[in-house]
Length: 486
Image 1 (cartoon, helix red, strand yellow):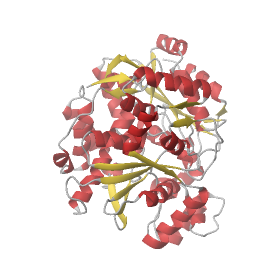
Image 2: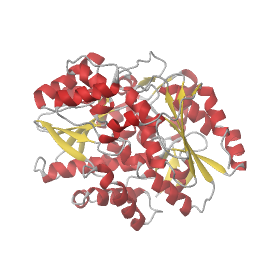
Image 3: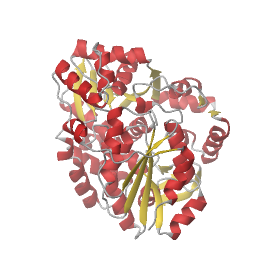
Image 4: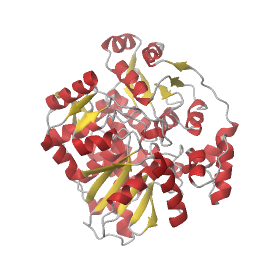
Protein backbone atom coordinates (compact mmCIF):
# COMPACT_ATOMS: atom_id res chain seq x y z
CA UNK A 1 0.00 0.00 0.00
CA UNK A 2 1.35 3.37 -1.02
CA UNK A 3 0.27 6.83 0.13
CA UNK A 4 -0.24 10.03 -1.86
CA UNK A 5 -0.30 13.65 -0.78
CA UNK A 6 -3.72 15.31 -0.95
CA UNK A 7 -2.12 18.29 -2.72
CA UNK A 8 0.29 16.49 -5.08
CA UNK A 9 -0.36 12.86 -5.99
CA UNK A 10 3.11 12.60 -7.53
CA UNK A 11 4.48 12.58 -4.00
CA UNK A 12 4.24 8.86 -3.24
CA UNK A 13 5.51 7.28 -0.01
CA UNK A 14 5.34 3.99 1.89
CA UNK A 15 3.38 3.59 5.12
CA UNK A 16 6.62 3.83 7.12
CA UNK A 17 7.56 7.07 5.35
CA UNK A 18 4.07 8.52 5.90
CA UNK A 19 4.25 7.80 9.63
CA UNK A 20 7.85 8.95 10.10
CA UNK A 21 7.31 12.17 8.11
CA UNK A 22 3.78 13.07 9.23
CA UNK A 23 3.08 15.80 6.67
CA UNK A 24 3.99 15.96 3.00
CA UNK A 25 6.68 18.51 2.09
CA UNK A 26 4.25 20.87 0.33
CA UNK A 27 1.78 20.78 3.23
CA UNK A 28 -0.58 18.05 2.01
CA UNK A 29 -1.78 15.10 4.09
CA UNK A 30 -1.00 11.51 3.20
CA UNK A 31 -3.91 9.31 2.09
CA UNK A 32 -3.95 5.63 1.06
CA UNK A 33 -3.97 4.83 -2.66
CA UNK A 34 -7.07 2.66 -2.16
CA UNK A 35 -9.45 1.30 0.47
CA UNK A 36 -8.73 -2.37 1.19
CA UNK A 37 -11.83 -4.56 1.24
CA UNK A 38 -11.97 -6.87 4.25
CA UNK A 39 -13.96 -9.89 5.41
CA UNK A 40 -16.08 -7.98 7.92
CA UNK A 41 -17.65 -11.08 9.46
CA UNK A 42 -14.22 -12.66 10.07
CA UNK A 43 -12.83 -9.45 11.57
CA UNK A 44 -15.85 -9.10 13.87
CA UNK A 45 -15.04 -12.53 15.34
CA UNK A 46 -11.63 -11.33 16.59
CA UNK A 47 -10.78 -9.81 19.97
CA UNK A 48 -9.70 -6.14 20.04
CA UNK A 49 -5.90 -6.59 19.69
CA UNK A 50 -6.35 -9.14 16.88
CA UNK A 51 -8.86 -6.85 15.16
CA UNK A 52 -6.45 -3.92 15.42
CA UNK A 53 -3.56 -5.90 13.91
CA UNK A 54 -5.75 -7.15 11.07
CA UNK A 55 -7.18 -3.74 10.11
CA UNK A 56 -4.02 -1.68 10.60
CA UNK A 57 -2.07 -4.32 8.68
CA UNK A 58 -4.26 -3.71 5.61
CA UNK A 59 -2.69 -0.25 5.33
CA UNK A 60 0.76 -0.70 6.89
CA UNK A 61 1.90 -3.31 4.42
CA UNK A 62 5.62 -2.71 5.00
CA UNK A 63 5.23 -3.75 8.65
CA UNK A 64 5.31 -7.45 9.50
CA UNK A 65 2.04 -8.96 10.74
CA UNK A 66 3.99 -10.47 13.64
CA UNK A 67 5.14 -7.02 14.74
CA UNK A 68 1.62 -5.57 14.44
CA UNK A 69 0.12 -8.43 16.45
CA UNK A 70 2.67 -7.99 19.23
CA UNK A 71 2.28 -4.20 19.22
CA UNK A 72 -1.52 -4.39 19.35
CA UNK A 73 -1.45 -6.96 22.14
CA UNK A 74 0.95 -4.81 24.18
CA UNK A 75 -1.13 -1.67 23.54
CA UNK A 76 -4.72 -2.75 24.07
CA UNK A 77 -4.33 -5.05 27.07
CA UNK A 78 -3.94 -4.03 30.70
CA UNK A 79 -3.67 -0.29 29.92
CA UNK A 80 -7.33 -0.32 28.83
CA UNK A 81 -8.54 -2.39 31.77
CA UNK A 82 -10.25 -4.97 29.57
CA UNK A 83 -12.51 -2.28 28.08
CA UNK A 84 -10.87 -1.53 24.73
CA UNK A 85 -13.67 -0.46 22.38
CA UNK A 86 -16.33 -0.99 25.05
CA UNK A 87 -19.94 -0.46 23.88
CA UNK A 88 -22.41 0.54 26.63
CA UNK A 89 -26.19 0.42 26.08
CA UNK A 90 -27.80 3.77 26.98
CA UNK A 91 -31.43 3.64 25.83
CA UNK A 92 -33.52 1.89 23.18
CA UNK A 93 -31.30 1.48 20.07
CA UNK A 94 -28.81 4.08 21.40
CA UNK A 95 -25.33 3.06 22.53
CA UNK A 96 -22.20 4.78 23.83
CA UNK A 97 -18.84 3.65 22.48
CA UNK A 98 -16.74 4.44 25.56
CA UNK A 99 -13.29 5.35 24.28
CA UNK A 100 -11.92 6.72 27.56
CA UNK A 101 -10.82 3.60 29.44
CA UNK A 102 -7.16 4.05 28.42
CA UNK A 103 -4.33 5.60 30.47
CA UNK A 104 -5.20 9.28 29.81
CA UNK A 105 -9.01 8.84 29.83
CA UNK A 106 -9.63 10.04 26.26
CA UNK A 107 -10.10 8.43 22.85
CA UNK A 108 -6.70 9.68 21.70
CA UNK A 109 -5.12 6.80 23.65
CA UNK A 110 -6.22 4.34 20.95
CA UNK A 111 -3.84 5.89 18.46
CA UNK A 112 -1.21 7.45 20.68
CA UNK A 113 -0.43 4.33 22.71
CA UNK A 114 0.20 2.41 19.46
CA UNK A 115 1.78 5.17 17.39
CA UNK A 116 5.16 5.38 19.19
CA UNK A 117 5.67 1.69 18.45
CA UNK A 118 4.77 2.34 14.80
CA UNK A 119 7.24 5.24 14.60
CA UNK A 120 10.15 3.27 16.09
CA UNK A 121 9.44 0.41 13.67
CA UNK A 122 9.09 2.84 10.74
CA UNK A 123 12.57 4.22 11.44
CA UNK A 124 13.92 0.66 11.50
CA UNK A 125 12.15 -0.15 8.23
CA UNK A 126 13.67 2.98 6.66
CA UNK A 127 17.09 2.44 8.26
CA UNK A 128 16.94 5.90 9.82
CA UNK A 129 19.01 6.73 12.89
CA UNK A 130 18.32 10.45 13.28
CA UNK A 131 16.52 11.93 16.27
CA UNK A 132 12.79 12.52 15.72
CA UNK A 133 11.35 15.79 17.01
CA UNK A 134 7.59 15.59 17.41
CA UNK A 135 5.64 18.83 17.58
CA UNK A 136 2.04 18.61 18.78
CA UNK A 137 -0.64 21.28 18.85
CA UNK A 138 -3.45 20.25 21.17
CA UNK A 139 -6.92 21.41 22.14
CA UNK A 140 -6.62 19.28 25.28
CA UNK A 141 -6.64 15.50 24.92
CA UNK A 142 -4.04 14.89 22.21
CA UNK A 143 -1.29 16.60 24.21
CA UNK A 144 -1.49 14.35 27.24
CA UNK A 145 -2.07 11.20 25.18
CA UNK A 146 0.98 11.99 23.01
CA UNK A 147 3.15 12.79 26.05
CA UNK A 148 2.09 9.57 27.73
CA UNK A 149 2.79 7.53 24.61
CA UNK A 150 6.15 9.05 23.66
CA UNK A 151 7.77 9.82 27.01
CA UNK A 152 11.24 8.28 27.31
CA UNK A 153 11.05 6.60 23.88
CA UNK A 154 14.68 6.41 22.65
CA UNK A 155 15.55 8.69 19.72
CA UNK A 156 12.45 10.86 20.18
CA UNK A 157 11.86 14.35 21.60
CA UNK A 158 8.34 15.73 21.95
CA UNK A 159 7.10 19.29 22.45
CA UNK A 160 3.41 19.97 23.08
CA UNK A 161 1.67 23.33 22.57
CA UNK A 162 -1.75 24.08 24.09
CA UNK A 163 -3.82 27.30 24.05
CA UNK A 164 -3.52 29.16 27.34
CA UNK A 165 -6.90 29.05 29.06
CA UNK A 166 -8.23 26.84 26.27
CA UNK A 167 -8.34 23.50 28.09
CA UNK A 168 -9.96 22.24 31.27
CA UNK A 169 -7.82 22.51 34.41
CA UNK A 170 -7.59 18.71 34.58
CA UNK A 171 -6.39 18.58 30.96
CA UNK A 172 -3.78 21.27 31.68
CA UNK A 173 -2.51 19.46 34.77
CA UNK A 174 -2.29 16.19 32.87
CA UNK A 175 0.17 17.88 30.51
CA UNK A 176 2.24 20.11 32.77
CA UNK A 177 2.89 17.33 35.30
CA UNK A 178 4.08 14.86 32.65
CA UNK A 179 7.19 12.92 33.61
CA UNK A 180 9.95 12.00 31.17
CA UNK A 181 13.35 13.26 30.06
CA UNK A 182 12.31 13.91 26.44
CA UNK A 183 9.12 15.92 26.95
CA UNK A 184 8.36 19.65 26.94
CA UNK A 185 5.05 21.51 27.27
CA UNK A 186 4.26 25.12 26.30
CA UNK A 187 1.16 27.25 26.76
CA UNK A 188 0.50 29.36 23.65
CA UNK A 189 -1.23 32.74 23.72
CA UNK A 190 -4.32 32.45 21.54
CA UNK A 191 -6.63 29.57 20.67
CA UNK A 192 -6.03 26.07 19.30
CA UNK A 193 -6.05 27.28 15.69
CA UNK A 194 -3.22 29.70 16.53
CA UNK A 195 -1.18 26.85 18.01
CA UNK A 196 -1.98 24.48 15.12
CA UNK A 197 -1.11 27.13 12.52
CA UNK A 198 2.19 27.80 14.30
CA UNK A 199 3.10 24.11 14.23
CA UNK A 200 2.07 23.74 10.58
CA UNK A 201 4.26 26.73 9.64
CA UNK A 202 7.27 25.00 11.20
CA UNK A 203 6.54 21.84 9.20
CA UNK A 204 6.23 23.86 6.01
CA UNK A 205 9.47 25.84 6.47
CA UNK A 206 12.33 24.26 4.47
CA UNK A 207 14.91 26.45 6.26
CA UNK A 208 13.94 24.97 9.64
CA UNK A 209 14.04 21.43 8.22
CA UNK A 210 17.48 22.09 6.71
CA UNK A 211 18.88 23.51 9.96
CA UNK A 212 17.54 20.58 12.00
CA UNK A 213 18.90 18.13 9.40
CA UNK A 214 22.40 19.52 10.07
CA UNK A 215 21.86 18.46 13.68
CA UNK A 216 20.60 15.01 12.58
CA UNK A 217 17.03 15.86 13.66
CA UNK A 218 13.89 15.23 11.61
CA UNK A 219 10.45 16.68 12.36
CA UNK A 220 7.35 14.53 12.74
CA UNK A 221 3.81 14.96 13.98
CA UNK A 222 1.56 13.14 16.44
CA UNK A 223 -1.53 15.16 15.49
CA UNK A 224 -4.24 13.56 13.40
CA UNK A 225 -2.60 15.05 10.31
CA UNK A 226 -0.27 12.00 10.68
CA UNK A 227 -1.64 8.84 9.05
CA UNK A 228 -0.37 6.83 12.03
CA UNK A 229 -2.86 8.67 14.23
CA UNK A 230 -5.81 7.98 11.98
CA UNK A 231 -5.48 4.30 11.09
CA UNK A 232 -5.85 2.85 14.65
CA UNK A 233 -9.13 4.75 15.05
CA UNK A 234 -10.79 2.76 12.25
CA UNK A 235 -10.67 -0.30 14.51
CA UNK A 236 -13.22 0.72 17.12
CA UNK A 237 -15.96 1.20 14.53
CA UNK A 238 -15.56 -2.49 13.70
CA UNK A 239 -15.46 -3.32 17.43
CA UNK A 240 -18.78 -1.52 18.01
CA UNK A 241 -20.43 -3.41 15.15
CA UNK A 242 -19.01 -6.71 16.43
CA UNK A 243 -20.55 -6.14 19.87
CA UNK A 244 -23.95 -5.31 18.38
CA UNK A 245 -23.76 -8.53 16.35
CA UNK A 246 -22.77 -10.58 19.38
CA UNK A 247 -25.61 -9.11 21.45
CA UNK A 248 -28.11 -9.88 18.69
CA UNK A 249 -28.99 -6.20 18.24
CA UNK A 250 -28.23 -6.33 14.50
CA UNK A 251 -28.07 -9.05 11.89
CA UNK A 252 -24.97 -9.14 9.74
CA UNK A 253 -25.31 -6.52 7.01
CA UNK A 254 -27.73 -4.29 8.95
CA UNK A 255 -26.67 -0.63 8.90
CA UNK A 256 -25.58 1.21 12.05
CA UNK A 257 -25.39 5.02 12.40
CA UNK A 258 -22.56 6.72 14.29
CA UNK A 259 -22.61 10.20 15.85
CA UNK A 260 -19.18 11.66 16.50
CA UNK A 261 -18.26 14.80 18.49
CA UNK A 262 -15.96 16.46 16.01
CA UNK A 263 -13.22 19.10 16.03
CA UNK A 264 -10.37 18.23 13.69
CA UNK A 265 -12.45 15.69 11.71
CA UNK A 266 -10.06 12.76 12.32
CA UNK A 267 -12.32 10.59 14.49
CA UNK A 268 -15.30 10.76 12.14
CA UNK A 269 -13.06 10.31 9.08
CA UNK A 270 -11.92 6.98 10.57
CA UNK A 271 -15.59 5.95 10.43
CA UNK A 272 -15.70 6.91 6.75
CA UNK A 273 -12.65 4.69 6.14
CA UNK A 274 -14.38 1.82 7.99
CA UNK A 275 -17.39 2.28 5.70
CA UNK A 276 -15.19 2.28 2.59
CA UNK A 277 -13.60 -0.98 3.79
CA UNK A 278 -17.01 -2.67 3.85
CA UNK A 279 -18.36 -2.11 7.38
CA UNK A 280 -22.17 -1.59 7.20
CA UNK A 281 -22.08 2.04 8.33
CA UNK A 282 -25.29 3.97 7.67
CA UNK A 283 -24.96 7.67 8.41
CA UNK A 284 -21.96 9.38 9.98
CA UNK A 285 -23.29 12.31 11.99
CA UNK A 286 -20.82 15.14 12.61
CA UNK A 287 -21.64 16.81 15.95
CA UNK A 288 -20.21 20.26 16.68
CA UNK A 289 -20.39 22.67 19.61
CA UNK A 290 -20.94 26.42 19.16
CA UNK A 291 -17.82 26.52 16.96
CA UNK A 292 -20.03 25.05 14.26
CA UNK A 293 -17.88 25.62 11.18
CA UNK A 294 -18.32 21.98 10.12
CA UNK A 295 -22.11 22.10 10.45
CA UNK A 296 -22.17 25.13 8.17
CA UNK A 297 -19.83 23.48 5.66
CA UNK A 298 -21.73 20.19 5.54
CA UNK A 299 -24.95 22.15 5.03
CA UNK A 300 -23.86 24.79 2.51
CA UNK A 301 -20.57 23.63 0.96
CA UNK A 302 -18.81 26.81 2.08
CA UNK A 303 -16.10 26.55 4.72
CA UNK A 304 -15.53 29.83 6.59
CA UNK A 305 -12.83 29.81 9.26
CA UNK A 306 -12.94 33.59 9.74
CA UNK A 307 -15.71 33.75 12.32
CA UNK A 308 -16.23 34.37 16.01
CA UNK A 309 -14.39 31.86 18.22
CA UNK A 310 -16.21 30.53 21.29
CA UNK A 311 -14.59 29.07 24.38
CA UNK A 312 -16.96 26.29 25.39
CA UNK A 313 -17.26 23.56 28.01
CA UNK A 314 -16.18 21.08 25.30
CA UNK A 315 -12.73 22.62 24.62
CA UNK A 316 -11.34 19.72 22.57
CA UNK A 317 -13.81 20.76 19.87
CA UNK A 318 -13.05 24.48 20.02
CA UNK A 319 -11.51 24.42 16.54
CA UNK A 320 -12.19 26.52 13.46
CA UNK A 321 -9.68 24.98 11.01
CA UNK A 322 -10.52 21.30 10.74
CA UNK A 323 -7.44 19.65 9.23
CA UNK A 324 -8.69 16.19 8.31
CA UNK A 325 -11.52 17.52 6.17
CA UNK A 326 -8.80 17.92 3.53
CA UNK A 327 -8.49 14.12 3.31
CA UNK A 328 -12.22 13.70 2.73
CA UNK A 329 -12.16 16.37 0.02
CA UNK A 330 -9.41 14.44 -1.75
CA UNK A 331 -11.30 11.14 -1.57
CA UNK A 332 -14.51 12.71 -2.86
CA UNK A 333 -13.02 14.87 -5.64
CA UNK A 334 -10.10 12.61 -6.59
CA UNK A 335 -8.23 15.78 -7.55
CA UNK A 336 -5.03 16.92 -5.84
CA UNK A 337 -5.08 20.15 -7.86
CA UNK A 338 -8.60 20.94 -6.69
CA UNK A 339 -7.73 20.23 -3.04
CA UNK A 340 -4.55 22.31 -3.29
CA UNK A 341 -6.63 25.18 -4.65
CA UNK A 342 -9.19 24.92 -1.85
CA UNK A 343 -6.48 24.86 0.83
CA UNK A 344 -4.73 27.84 -0.79
CA UNK A 345 -8.02 29.74 -0.68
CA UNK A 346 -8.48 28.80 3.00
CA UNK A 347 -4.97 30.01 3.83
CA UNK A 348 -5.28 33.27 1.90
CA UNK A 349 -8.92 34.24 2.43
CA UNK A 350 -10.10 32.12 5.37
CA UNK A 351 -12.73 30.32 3.31
CA UNK A 352 -13.48 28.12 0.31
CA UNK A 353 -16.54 26.71 -1.46
CA UNK A 354 -16.74 23.23 -2.99
CA UNK A 355 -18.62 22.35 -6.15
CA UNK A 356 -22.30 21.31 -5.67
CA UNK A 357 -21.54 17.75 -6.80
CA UNK A 358 -18.75 17.52 -4.18
CA UNK A 359 -21.12 18.61 -1.42
CA UNK A 360 -23.78 16.16 -2.63
CA UNK A 361 -21.27 13.29 -2.54
CA UNK A 362 -20.24 14.22 1.02
CA UNK A 363 -23.86 14.48 2.16
CA UNK A 364 -24.52 10.91 0.98
CA UNK A 365 -22.44 9.68 3.95
CA UNK A 366 -22.46 12.58 6.41
CA UNK A 367 -25.15 14.31 8.42
CA UNK A 368 -24.48 17.14 10.87
CA UNK A 369 -25.70 19.27 13.72
CA UNK A 370 -24.50 21.40 16.60
CA UNK A 371 -25.31 21.96 20.26
CA UNK A 372 -25.43 25.19 22.27
CA UNK A 373 -23.91 25.36 25.75
CA UNK A 374 -27.39 25.19 27.28
CA UNK A 375 -28.24 22.12 25.21
CA UNK A 376 -25.00 20.40 26.27
CA UNK A 377 -25.75 20.94 29.96
CA UNK A 378 -29.34 19.81 29.46
CA UNK A 379 -28.18 16.66 27.67
CA UNK A 380 -25.79 15.69 30.48
CA UNK A 381 -28.63 16.03 32.96
CA UNK A 382 -31.17 14.23 30.75
CA UNK A 383 -28.93 11.26 30.07
CA UNK A 384 -28.17 10.90 33.78
CA UNK A 385 -31.74 11.37 35.03
CA UNK A 386 -33.49 9.41 32.27
CA UNK A 387 -30.93 6.68 31.48
CA UNK A 388 -28.63 6.65 34.52
CA UNK A 389 -25.77 7.39 32.14
CA UNK A 390 -23.01 9.86 33.09
CA UNK A 391 -21.20 11.53 30.21
CA UNK A 392 -18.78 14.38 29.63
CA UNK A 393 -19.45 17.59 27.72
CA UNK A 394 -18.10 16.41 24.34
CA UNK A 395 -20.16 13.23 24.47
CA UNK A 396 -23.21 15.32 25.42
CA UNK A 397 -22.75 17.40 22.25
CA UNK A 398 -23.01 14.16 20.28
CA UNK A 399 -25.95 12.76 22.27
CA UNK A 400 -27.91 15.94 21.62
CA UNK A 401 -27.22 15.90 17.88
CA UNK A 402 -27.81 12.12 17.70
CA UNK A 403 -31.29 12.65 19.12
CA UNK A 404 -32.19 14.74 16.09
CA UNK A 405 -30.84 12.18 13.62
CA UNK A 406 -32.02 8.91 15.20
CA UNK A 407 -33.75 6.69 12.62
CA UNK A 408 -36.39 4.17 13.63
CA UNK A 409 -34.99 0.63 13.61
CA UNK A 410 -31.38 1.75 13.03
CA UNK A 411 -29.01 1.54 16.03
CA UNK A 412 -27.22 4.81 16.86
CA UNK A 413 -23.74 4.59 18.34
CA UNK A 414 -22.48 7.78 20.00
CA UNK A 415 -18.71 8.00 20.33
CA UNK A 416 -17.92 8.92 23.94
CA UNK A 417 -14.53 10.55 23.67
CA UNK A 418 -13.53 11.49 27.24
CA UNK A 419 -14.23 10.60 30.86
CA UNK A 420 -16.73 12.91 32.60
CA UNK A 421 -14.07 13.35 35.30
CA UNK A 422 -11.84 15.32 32.91
CA UNK A 423 -14.48 18.09 33.10
CA UNK A 424 -15.88 17.67 36.62
CA UNK A 425 -17.04 21.25 37.19
CA UNK A 426 -19.03 21.43 33.94
CA UNK A 427 -20.62 18.02 34.52
CA UNK A 428 -21.46 18.78 38.16
CA UNK A 429 -23.08 22.10 37.23
CA UNK A 430 -25.08 20.41 34.46
CA UNK A 431 -26.46 18.01 37.07
CA UNK A 432 -27.78 21.00 39.03
CA UNK A 433 -25.05 21.33 41.66
CA UNK A 434 -23.00 24.39 42.49
CA UNK A 435 -19.50 23.37 41.50
CA UNK A 436 -16.51 24.41 43.63
CA UNK A 437 -13.78 26.36 41.83
CA UNK A 438 -11.24 23.62 42.50
CA UNK A 439 -11.45 20.77 39.97
CA UNK A 440 -10.41 18.13 42.49
CA UNK A 441 -13.08 19.17 44.94
CA UNK A 442 -15.54 19.08 42.05
CA UNK A 443 -14.29 15.61 41.15
CA UNK A 444 -14.95 14.45 44.71
CA UNK A 445 -18.42 16.01 44.76
CA UNK A 446 -19.25 14.38 41.41
CA UNK A 447 -18.23 11.02 42.84
CA UNK A 448 -20.49 11.57 45.86
CA UNK A 449 -23.40 12.81 43.73
CA UNK A 450 -23.30 9.90 41.26
CA UNK A 451 -21.70 7.02 43.15
CA UNK A 452 -19.21 6.61 40.28
CA UNK A 453 -15.49 6.59 40.99
CA UNK A 454 -13.11 8.91 39.15
CA UNK A 455 -10.27 7.22 37.22
CA UNK A 456 -7.25 6.80 39.49
CA UNK A 457 -4.92 8.55 37.00
CA UNK A 458 -7.01 11.75 37.20
CA UNK A 459 -7.43 11.72 40.98
CA UNK A 460 -3.65 11.26 41.35
CA UNK A 461 -2.94 14.55 39.53
CA UNK A 462 -3.62 16.40 42.77
CA UNK A 463 -0.35 15.13 44.24
CA UNK A 464 1.81 15.77 41.16
CA UNK A 465 4.19 18.71 40.81
CA UNK A 466 3.83 21.05 37.83
CA UNK A 467 6.98 20.86 35.69
CA UNK A 468 6.18 23.25 32.84
CA UNK A 469 4.99 26.87 33.05
CA UNK A 470 6.40 28.64 29.96
CA UNK A 471 3.95 30.78 27.96
CA UNK A 472 4.88 31.73 24.38
CA UNK A 473 3.40 33.48 21.35
CA UNK A 474 2.51 31.31 18.31
CA UNK A 475 5.41 32.87 16.39
CA UNK A 476 7.85 31.45 18.97
CA UNK A 477 7.01 27.81 18.14
CA UNK A 478 9.72 27.96 15.45
CA UNK A 479 12.26 29.09 18.06
CA UNK A 480 11.32 26.14 20.25
CA UNK A 481 11.89 23.75 17.34
CA UNK A 482 15.29 25.30 16.60
CA UNK A 483 16.35 25.04 20.24
CA UNK A 484 16.80 21.26 19.95
CA UNK A 485 20.28 19.81 19.47
CA UNK A 486 21.43 16.36 18.36
